[in-house]
Amino acid sequence: MGKFPEGFLWGSATASYQVEGGIENNDWAEGARDGRVPTCGRATDHYNRFESDFDIVKSLGQNAHRFSIEWARIEPEEGKFDEEEIEHYIKVLHALKVRGLEPFVTLWHFTLPIWFSKKGGFQNKDAPEMFARYCEYVVSRLGNKAKYWMTMNEPLVWASGGYRTGKWPPFKKNLYYFVTVQSALARSHILAYKRIKKIFPNIQIGIAKHNIHFASNGYWWANIVSGFMNWFWNERFLNRIRGYQDFIGLNHYFYKKFGKKVNLPQTDMGWDIYPEAIYGCLIGLKKYNLPVYVTESGLADAKDDRRANYIKDYISNVEKAIKEGVDVRGYFYWSLLDNYEWAFGFKERFGLVEVDYGTLERKIRPSAFIYKKIAESNVI
Ligand code: FCB
Image (cartoon, rainbow, N blue to C red):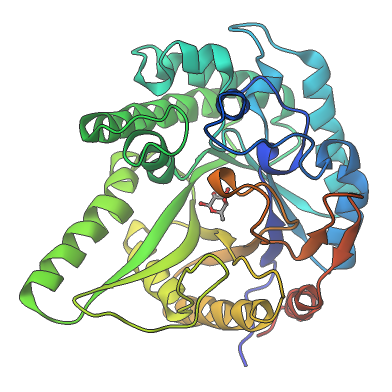
């Protein structure tokens, strides 16, 4: 048994395009029209149902919530900001507040307005300026309503999907682009960070960083590869934005041991379940000396027959890392709801809450009550 620090945040996460529905003016919707990724359509209709969805969050004993703002809604045309959409997110933040849920807001979670992607997206030399202008605008309007902000979600995963594997917009396969676009993202983050701090110095800003626990079987070559990958995938971006983040958001899903085929239980997506991996990732973040929030951790499990243990075991390992001196202050399960899992569409079921895509009815999965117990007691 382990007790979590006083004030620890327990929540679940979503992202705009994956749950809101009705977004047609971003690069993923365009990609779907071109038949290159699945259609998202009305998704879970969270855009209209956020209040009842937040009632569920509250009923599940959580005290925080992570969501993202859709850039294409706020800035549908370059430099033209839509006040009605700002009003929408003011309502979202208000709905969280009255339910006692601490908001964690992501400004950009993978999807880009069509006008921005047409201009080359983050490959455009003015991208940092355009991105920072958007961030600054949103925070100037909403910054007094949320303390924790993330400029971007998983820069390396996004760069990898769009420029290395080519399975995500803009569907390119080019290692040079894959590497250089990461520099543009780091510059974009830093500029946005500076602009936001000018308006609201007390806002806490970070990114959600996807880190993998790389291990080795001890062979010399496996040690080298795992060391290189740890630097390249886990640390390089964080090093670049050093000094321009107030906390680290850790999104964690993967374990990779080089030199050895390990047979582990798996999620519906074939991702290995290895709870010690989150401990490894957290220990790896210790040297940054910053507060850490686990901003995503979860699995696809349609039958809900592995989720409860997954949650318990991963959270036990978070507690172990806290005992070892990592300043972890919150945990957000991915995801609150079943949702649009990018190139995989709606098949994969990550939700604490099941969504019937025919009726849009919500049904709380049994594992959500296990998570509730942990959240309410603050103990694992
Ligand atoms: C992460 C993404 C999130 C979701 C999960 C399963 O990489 O941030 O949107 O798709 O994976």
